[in-house]
Length: 205
Image (cartoon, rainbow, N blue to C red; front, side, top):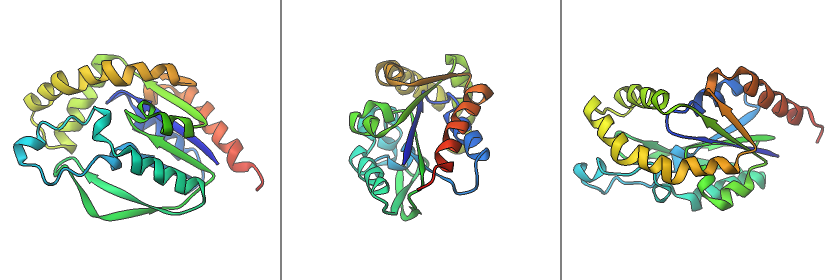
């Protein structure tokens, strides 16, 4: 089993990189596990408290469950991946079954901050992007997907996203085997990763 970790700052283009890799592969050949599914359930908090959740701090992730699920997949077991909503800040009652495959991609801003999870990755990729490019993507995404106002997005960026990126995310770049500047626009890096995955998929059991 080949496990690829793809990290990088919020709005760096990680999801685009993952989608472009997946589009170049046979259907259902790769399982993708998003760190975002493993945010801790905050349904018990009041609405004002939910607005102050720091999604960019490692403590916001239930790494114990994420590590256990990756280990289950490595052991050939199907997992039930949680579903998390940024709008309600809660996990859904339903889950999504994920079967083990030859290749697993773990994607998320904080995945390399956890040593146990980092050690499970055979290839570690850090998607890099300029700060202003990331901010523009964050604004567009949060307005549409997370129901925030422009003012709310900018305040959240100033108080949480930027300081947490500098403290926790940017330093994990040193763990990367491959650094991908320009995110999804870096076709060369995406082709290299896709070719490596195809090699793994073509291996005989």
